[in-house]
Length: 82
Picture 1 (cartoon, rainbow, N blue to C red):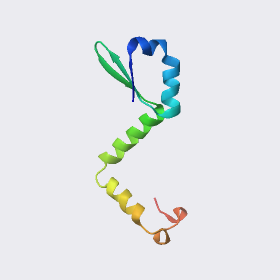
Picture 2: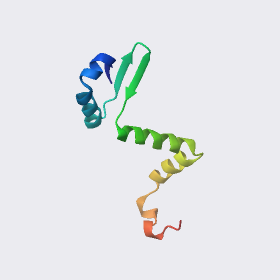
Picture 3: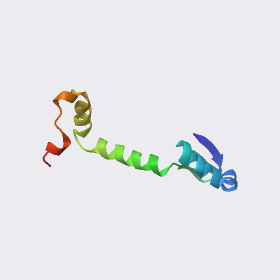
Picture 4: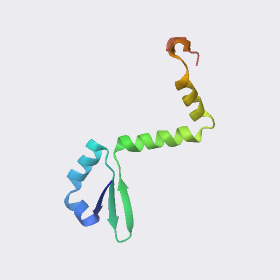
């Protein structure tokens, strides 16, 4: 994680945002009142999805068990009833 104070963040805002997007490198921006973290939209969406999966009882275990299922025992997607 890159650490930068607010003054240097302002001076380099464009390049720091590009770095965050291109390399998924969070930026810790420090101010006198506290810190803020800048993350890419992809990282943010992934974080929300992970939180959602963790919040649904049993879903994480179902996913893990499904990943262990032999491919030959899986049914084709078009045969799945929703």
